[in-house]
Amino acid sequence: MRESVAFRITRIAVLAIITLFVAAPLYVLVTSAFKPLKDVQGSFTWWPTHLTVQPFIDIWSTVPLARYFANSVIVSLSATVLSVVVAILAAYSVSRFTFRGSGSFKATVLSTQMFPAILFLIPLYLLFVLVDRASGLQLAGSQLGLVITYLTFSLPFSIWMLVGYFETIPRELDEAARVDGASSLRTLFQVVVPAATPGIVAVAIYAFMVAWGEILFASVLTTDESRTLAVGLREYASQVNVYWNEIMAASVVVSVPIVIAFLLLQRFLVAGFTSGAVK
Image (cartoon, rainbow, N blue to C red):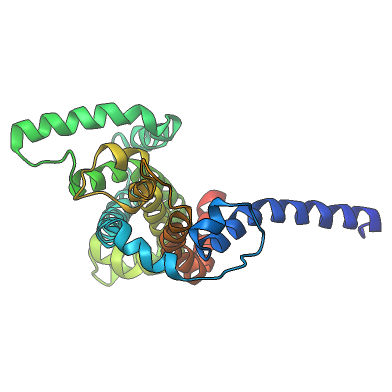
């Protein structure tokens, strides 16, 4: 059935309004990053009258942004790698082997997504303090503690996604590999993992995004030395002045890695999410 002209116009109008609603804040963010501070604090203009790249230069000296950037990269990549590796092993075990408690394990993994993350803030902090007193690991306020924290967020979802994706891969591939003498681990990494690349990439992007943009736990569980980018942006607002143009410029810099990763891997991301969700 062909669409009527009125319905088509209405659909286009609604999509245009939604697009403008989403794009307007991004436009203000980017244009404000290229304005002098006096233009941002003064009357608002949709188009900058004095374009400048000075805010992108000043952001590195106003606060130790390079250190925060390095901390975010270390924490995010570590959490992503650990989450993906553990999720692959766990999901393969659940999807390929029947063992006592496998159903309870899957139910437990899924049930962790029912609770808001803020409920775990104080328990995790107290747990880290107790571990520090007993072992001296210094989890509270360190990058290691933040990596462990982000694993508690991304790992359950990663396992659940990969279980659904692995179950779409024919078991005959595993059986053929075993006939050739391959072990379970060799079968996993040489047969199943290459076939599940879209799902694994989707899980990796999700884990990276969780760690890169998180602010609540990072603001409590870090110190000046281990602070990440998301928390460091607050330092552009002092008691004397708020450097709005530098905040916008730093926000653009923070967003660049995620945008680049999404543009390069979006086809894997869509394929991974849809396949796991359908299963």
